[in-house]
Each structure stands twice: as structure tokens, then as C-alpha cells.
Image (cartoon, rainbow, N blue to C red; front, top):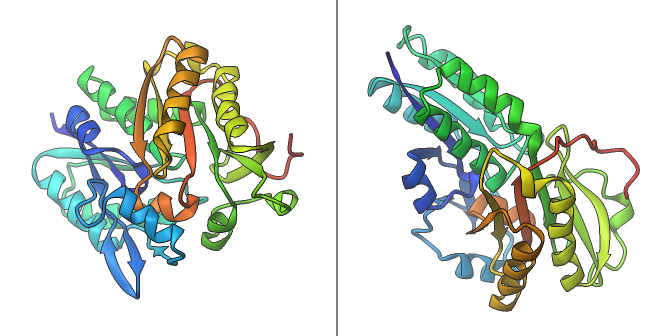
Length: 302
């Protein structure tokens, strides 16, 4: 019986510690600075998160790539040759074409490994929301579930990953094409902070606007609680991704989570190089399993 390897991509925002703990790997994307491609490493060999988001604060315009076909070919062949079947859980196809590319490459690679399996799953999520599904899949592997059982279960859980994120501005989202339904959110965003979710189709959508930074941080925790995060059984943690926010804000979030989500452990991770380009410096989001996401872009904003 072949072993099973769970992989994600540079958008999963998994830390080295989480990848080691859950035996995960990822396909590498690239960010572009001054016309040069750089590996979007989740272990931050080239820049620290503070340096990376500092560049953005200073006005540098960074761009990103999806996972190259050659990278999928490399990582698929590596694990198949080691006796693994591979489940790749990638960023929402409403935000990147990586899952589609992976699916095409997988078909070619499997011609050389006729007894192996590769599944490419559209997570309908971004950032640590992808990572959460990868962690969940890893637990299913450890529990002895079959390849097909894991694929089915991860697919069934995608819409139960809830994202609540606040950003300083939608400018980065607009520039990278990763936001929908933003017409009503153009005015005075220095005072009014948008709350973003990943909708039922995996699109990034602003669904609410809150006046002031402190209120927006409280709102994302309140929304997670209202979405049933405290009682979700898929994971005993909730996850906060952050783009070099202040220590004071981190402490505020810790207190809010302890108060509103007392059944959960809090895991704080940095936004990675790819998602970081979209969200911009000082963004912060909370991800948790909870009620099924039903909202779709185009519905009336709350």
C-alpha cells in the first residue's frame, strides 16, 4: 500500500513548525521585485516578515506568480518516486490558476507512475485557510484513512473554513485582481476598515465595513464566534495570519480570542510572501472551522 503525502503551496502560510509537526510540504511560487523572481519561501530565508512588509510600507510594488508547471513536476515526481500518493491542496482557483496547472501536470506525471495517485483540490481558501485543510488532511492520514476518503473529506470541509480579515486598504487586492464586489468600499478607507471573507466560491469579498482599527479587530473575532468557531470539532485551534502588526495589536487579539473563543487555542502566523502582496502591510485575519460558508459575491453587503 502506498503512503500518502499532503502538500500545499506558498499561499498556505504554514510555518516551518507546523509543516514539521504535520509532515507537510509545499509547491513554491515566486514574488517579483525589481524585475527579478524570488522564491516565495514560507520559511523566510531571504527576508524576514518585518523586512518584507517594510518594503511595502516604503512604497515598493511587488508582484507574484502562480506555481510554475516545472515546480509541480518536480514535487510530484519526488514524492511518487518515494512511494507516496500525493494530495495537493491549493489556493482557491478564484485567486490563482495553480490548481488548474497542477491538475494538468499531474496527468502527465502519472503516465510515468501508472500505479500512483495525485489529487489536486481547490481549497476555496487562501492563506492559513489552505494550511488548515492541509493539517486536517494530515490528521486523516495519521488516522489511517484511505486516499479517496481523505480527498472526499477535505473536499467536504472546504466551505466550513471561515475567514474574517481586515486590511488597511483594498488597494493591494485591486492591484492583484484578488477582490470582488468592492464597488461600495472605495470611500475613506483610512477611517473605515473593510472586513473580507472567502465566499462560498472561494472569491475574496468585502462584506462589512467597520469604523476604526480597534473595532475591526474586535469584529473579526466576533464574526468568528458567530460562525460557530468555538464549537467546531475539526481542529482545536483558531489561526491568525498577520502582516507585521504591532505587539499591542497582537496582545489585543489574544485577549479577544481568549474571551470570545475560550475552547480554542490560538496559533499566530505571518502572512507569507504571496498572500502578503495581496493583503498589504498591517493586514490581520482570523481563520477557523465553523458553520458552512454560504455567502457569494454579488449578494448585498451587510
